[in-house]
Image 1 (cartoon, rainbow over the protein chains, first blue to last red):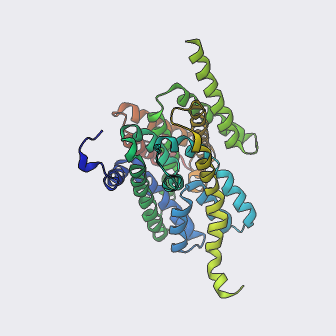
Image 2 (cartoon, rainbow over the protein chains, first blue to last red):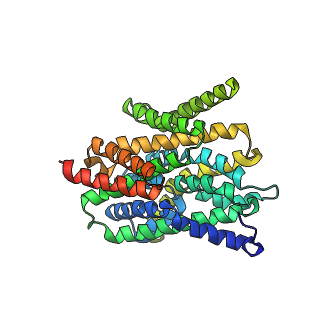
Image 3 (cartoon, helix red, strand yellow):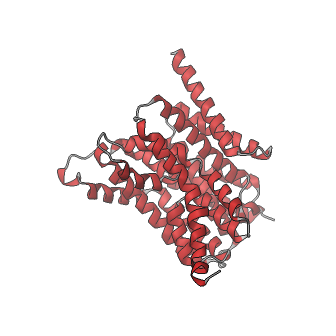
Length: 242
Length: 115
């Protein structure tokens, strides 16, 4: 992508990632989403410090919403922890798919700790799209810059939402909550060039609401494992047929 | 409860009930990814599973939303998603265009059809 020697250092790759974050739709989608989460935290009586810290530490909107509403409505600590951990399982395959794209032969495990912590749907979708055009030795710095931009947007929005709480009309609160499913749908459709990804997306989208309606336990995990495996098998069969 | 612990308590909850139960999956992923290279066949399957879970999250957010979004009728939520996808396809495959059009459709639909 770049052959200019001055632009090949880690700090410049970090800055390039940081700049790319603000050209990503997710900087703005996250801003809107976390305004909603900041307002939610205020309504449940958490402090501003606690809310900002939880955005950076948890860095996964579904887990954070579960934690806030569970603790806020007086659920037991054990129940809350179980609900949070179930929502976090999706992060495992994302990390496993991402890290081999970031690593070089000489990468130390501790250099992968930040990208591991920053892995979330928004960051994952953008990294899978952009990393192939970044030289391999700059990918970790680029990815960290991108993540830092997205986290910064979410942290600022958490504070804004905390102060706005109570003054948001209902229809705009609904629109903020709609940002997540809408933007994920459009970006996954953009990024799915391979048949296996498109099938996995379609199967997961169809399976999860059905399993949830049938009250199947761990519905998301099942739709992921069954939908993903089916998509992979179709891909294998078609490859074998060629 | 002593006062110091009382002040720390929300932060202990954040670490042990919010941060660690979520972070454990990322760290497990770090361990499992250690021996895998980018071209590994198993990664195609792992990515398919991750994509299907992501699609499942989207499906549940559209069909079973929380909070204020639940007061918007399901038909409006589905219709607005389709408007967003259509705008994305028609307007230079721009995700921004898709998100803006889908949001506009949701707000218009909510104002027109919400009880």
